[in-house]
Image (cartoon, rainbow, N blue to C red):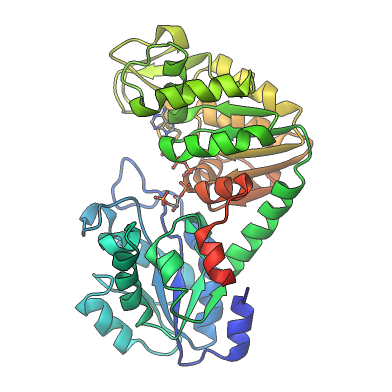
Length: 398
Ligand SMILES: Nc1ncnc2c1ncn2[C@@H]1O[C@H](COP(=O)(O)OP(=O)(O)O)[C@@H](O)[C@H]1O
Ligand SMILES: O=C(OP(=O)(O)O)[C@H](O)COP(=O)(O)O
C-alpha cells in the first residue's frame, strides 16, 4: 500500500490532491450549527498540513450525517469548513456543491498550498448507491478534479461508497497517516487480543451493529449491550420497551443471538426512562421489566452501570463503541460516564471507537490518556475486529 509519505516523496507542489476525510463531526443538540467535538477534524490535520505545506492544491471531501442523496441544509459541511480553517490557521475555500459548477470553478481557481472543502458527498445519490454504474459515474466526476487520491477517512473505510472505493480505482492512491495508524493498532488487537476480551456496544446505529455482534461473539468472553442497541434485545427477551429505540424486524435476530451467546451477552437490568427526548423531560430509573408504555429509555440505570463496570474490571482487552445513553443531555450521561470510567481503570488494553464515543470521552472530561487507543471510527473498527475486508482498505491495497 502506498502512503502519504510516498506521495510527498514524489513531489506534490502544484499538483491537485483529493483527500477523503471523515469530517462527520457531532453538533451540539441544543445549538444547531455548533460543532460539539472537532476530534475528527483534528485527526486529519497532519495530512492536510503536510500537503498544504508541500504546495499541493488540496481538495478535501467528506460526508456529514446521513442525508438522502440530495442537498439538505441540515447536513451542510459549511460550519466544518470554518472550523477547519481555524484549526489549519489558513483559509479554506468552501464549495456549495460537490461536483457541480461551484465545485468545478473552485477546483479551477485553487492555488498551490490552498485547501478546498467540497459540500457533503452524500448530497449526491452516486456516493452511497449500491449500483456500481451510478457510483462509478459520480466517482468519475470526483476523480476528474485531481491527480492523486489520499484516503485518511478511517471512520468511513467500511463503506463501499464512491469516494472511498471507486475514486481510488481511478487515480494513483495513497493511505493517509490516520488510516495507517488506526489499522496498525486494530491489527494488533484483532490478531492477539489478550483474554478476557470484553466488547461494549451502545449508540444508535442498531441494525449496522447487530450484524457485527454475530461475527464477534465467537471471539469475545463478554459482550455488553447498552445505549439504543439494547431495547431490541430486551424486547426479544419478552420485555416491553415503551417508546424506546426499537428495530422491530430485528427482534428475532436478537433472540437467536441471545440463544447462541449462552449468557455471554450482558443486557441492562434497569434504564432511565424519560417522558420525551429532552433534557427537561420527567425521568425515572425503572427495572427493564417495568418500562412504561409512554416512556423511552435514554440511559442505562445505576444497577446496570455497576454490572457493566464489574464485567469490564477483570478484562485484559476492552473494545467500546457507542454511548450507553444520550450522554449529550446531562440527565442521561451517567451510564456512559460510569462505564467509560471503569474502562479507564482496567489492567489491560482498551480501545474506544466511534465519532460519538470519542466525543463522549472528551466532552465528559474523561482522561483520554487512560485509554489505549481512541479510534475515529466505530463501525469501521468493529468491522475490522470482526475480520472483514474493509472496502476502503482493499481499494488502497489494489
Ligand atoms: N437509548 C438511546 N436512545 C436513543 N439514542 C441513543 C441512546 N443511547 C445512545 N444514543 C445516541 O447514540 C448516538 C451515538 O451512536 P453511534 O453513532 O452508534 O455511536 P458512535 O458514533 O460512537 O459509533 C449518540 O448521539 C447518543 O445520543
Ligand atoms: O460516524 C461514523 O461512523 P461511527 O458512528 O460508526 O463512528 C462515520 O462517519 C461513518 O458514518 P456512517 O455510519 O453514516 O456511514
